Image (cartoon, rainbow, N blue to C red):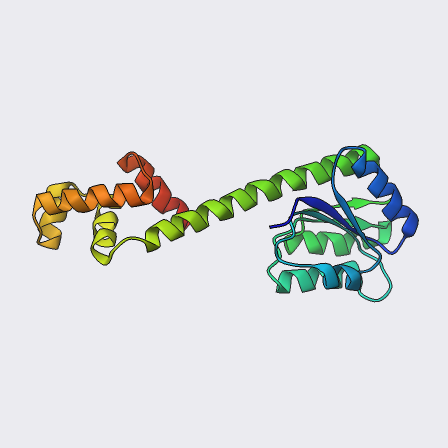
Length: 201
């Protein structure tokens, strides 16, 4: 994962420079790219923050670049900069998962608000992905029997019912239950259930 930054892709030098100045004045890290091709050449899946993307550019336009990023399963939030005639295209991008679009000429404060919202959402999404990966790792560490016990705990079964269903003693269920709680890092059954449900969402 790289440092969060605002990636700006626009073939207009003046637009890139003015956005860079605006965002750096707010303490944001900024990277500039004169074309979609230049951004794709630099892109890696660890990019985080957000992407501000002009719709109309020579060569690869903003929509083409967006499609390429979707094909690479990029999770980077995308804000499109559009001229008046490009609004239908931007709306179509929203339907495909883009974060938002802003029309030229735009208000600096509106642009800042959009970018800051996207940066927050990207941070939250990254934290959720990391948490899901951690839960998946903990589930992987369970033995087959511990998984069976976990499934029955989550289904709301009591120790005696679990013992009957699995044909083992209550004492053995308690041992497995305690190991499951420890490996999953849960302090209560409610916490354990929430962890498993989060993983399924």
